[in-house]
Length: 164
Image 1 (cartoon, rainbow, N blue to C red):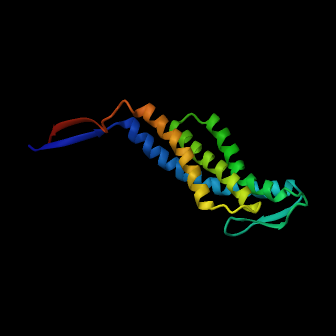
Image 2: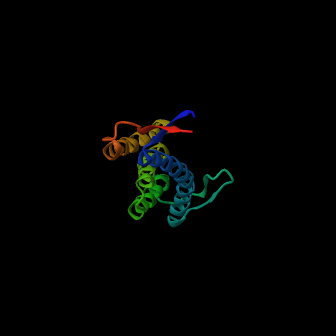
Image 3: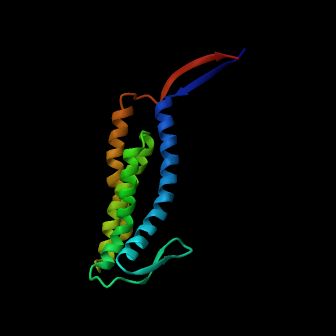
């Protein structure tokens, strides 16, 4: 007979991490579509004309006559995602899905403001804006994760030896 070491991870922490990763990937892919269609919907509401290209980017064909129309269309992409994902956070009960939605919603809200400033003529580094949005979203989520799982300092719950 051989002794084999059996390691059992914390089901809650590992399960949360895996679910969070899957949810974040799915929600970020969905966010790209919501983002561009929010631009397009806002453009059409303001009287402009546009289309979604094969690269999934909104291309304006005719901008609205409003002086601030370009800025409104620019901010609508990120804020559209932020609003949709905020509503989803209220509906969904799973903590990992809500954490993923929160990070993306905050990032898109910050990105929407950066996009508005960029299209209004300000010199804005969009990579820095997008990155800072993720940081602003991740910090509260990490705090909540620590509060939920922080009291369990060990990753390994139980190590036992099993006879084979």
